Image (cartoon, rainbow, N blue to C red; front, side, top):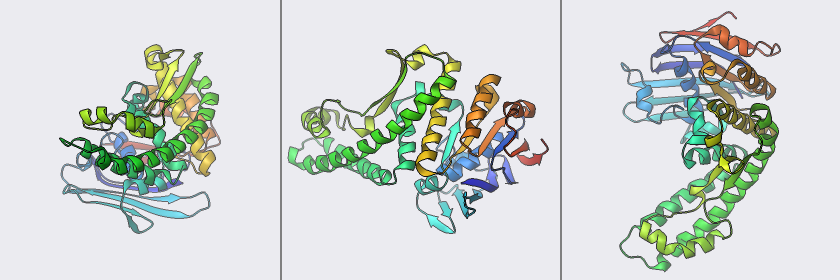
Length: 366
């Protein structure tokens, strides 16, 4: 899918904007605070139901307005056009629509419009909490394994009920057994999907990362969230008293993580800030490659403030790989020429330039 038209109303300082993006690369430039990132946020709304910067959607709505809307037409590789739209209101109401029908969750949007974001927060993959890395894993599993999301939702519900029982003053072991049985079954299925998808990711990542980060003994490993030598059934049985004392389920798929190391040490403790930036870029590109190879579709990349994140040599390397996987790209920066220079060696892709000033978005010449 690529976005062929984009309409934005009342999102931050953008009162109204209409864009006809290129299916290739879209450069968005302007002064700080002009609305460049807000333009990317509108795309994030369509793919995630929220901004990539915050879950607080009310801050997205223009101060003088009661609601915001974002609308786009998506065009598939075979020419099918799918309209998609999001509306958010200060009162809390939200509407998500795809192909003229209401959909009831942001997950439905994500299935139609897979979005990858590269910005300053991307580096939380290395230095952030395990939750950031679980979300990284599960983004890919969600998009390549259609049965995963219902299982994940069911596991979250099961954990909620189990934890509620664990917080009681007293509990009989038999009371929690039905939830343990269901949780173990769900865990086995979720773990299988994660392991399989991560194996696909590892293949792409290993081939790609050496081009971005020339570091010996760099490795990525998966930790499933409980002792590798135990089945989850055995773990729950042995940890019941500790879970009861804690008042929650201490281990499981909700505690999974990935470890990125150089030798025996965490990469975040060894690599320079520049190397960390390149590493997470390689991870994001590898995700896009797996997604394409497994589904035949391409995700859309939003790259916010590219010149601030990478030096010229590696901006060109990132541009090369984004071009190689054929994704539609939206990239922002303060200076037009600096953005264009990153793609100067790539001549066979359609490029369009948009200037943003005081919330007004205008297409300009190259």
